[in-house]
Amino acid sequence: GAKTRRRGHDRECYDGISYEDRGHQTTCTWLQLKGYTHGSFSNAYLYVASIYWSVTTLTTVGYGDISANTTAERLFTLLVEVVGVAFFASLVTSLSGDVFAEDDQASELRKLKSRVKTYLAKHRFPHELALAITSFLRTQRDFRRDGADAPGDAASRDAEVVGFLKDTLNLPLRRAMALHCVRADECLAGHAFFRGRHDNFVADCVVDCASAVAGPLEVVLATGLHVDAVRLVTRGDVGVSARGFRLSAGEDFFGHEGKLARAEWRAPLCTFGQWAEFVVLPWADLLDRLLAAHPDVEQDLQRHAKERTAAHANVFRVLSPAEAAATSSSSSSVSPPAAVPPSTAITPGSLGASEDVAGLEARLDRLQGDVSAL
Image (cartoon, rainbow, N blue to C red; front, top):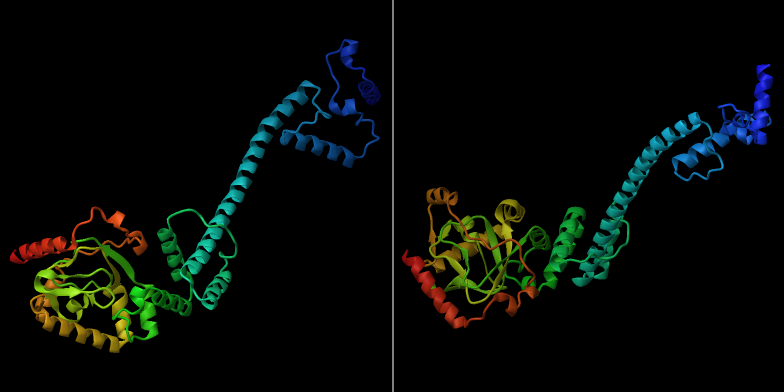
């Protein structure tokens, strides 16, 4: 009885005759409307049809070939749509976030590799050395993609590339890179500080050095004992003009007098009427370690410091060991800033109003005389 009535109802729904047409409140389900309840369809077919409706609903495609017909079906569809859309949106957001994050990382790696290539070409690295550096970098897991250079300041890009290469390359390649930079820079290639030194010493100095710049009439070192760093004068001259003491670019360096000869400055060391640039070699993190490995260089620097302090007694005062220990902790220095524009960026237009060099030196003499009197 009941089974027969159900089959009759299924046939009526499939034929388009609903209970509403007969005055009843019941309507046909989507299974009945599609004829899926006749028993002529396998369970696999019905499962695929159900999954098809679920996926089209969750992805908001909704072709409409399978749609809710009864009140219960409509309520269930609303629930699936609300929950499904929220889940699908969350899934898409998560996947797209991962993809974009990977794209950003790959883009940064491509830009960095391009900047490395630009740096090697800009500074004319020999083909063999440039090939060795790039081949080494290709073995690194995070450095294997090509890309375009990013806009930005050339000096900051160079600094980023140099820092990256220092942290990534092995010691032989770092030294080879540093030696090339020294030989390519005319101000460093023939500098007296590096003249006759072992290549490893020169390379290690350049790898860990810093740069500094000082403007016209700027105090580079104040009076007192200085044991923080050795500074190589690479451009411009500095000195104590009132006492006839002058240090020239490419030939002179200073800062070793306090460490190796226990000599303090009687007068401040200043620039003259032009900008000056320096290579800064810190004692604590660099020279102490290098001189321990190169005692011949330490002996030569110590001899140089003693000869200078003896020849310029009006500029230096040699302290006793007790005095040096007492004053080294309290002495102050006026150091040039660490951030340096490239020398090509220091143009007459960037130095402010021009002034006669002789007039600047006269002003410097007066200032140094006032400081000495104090």
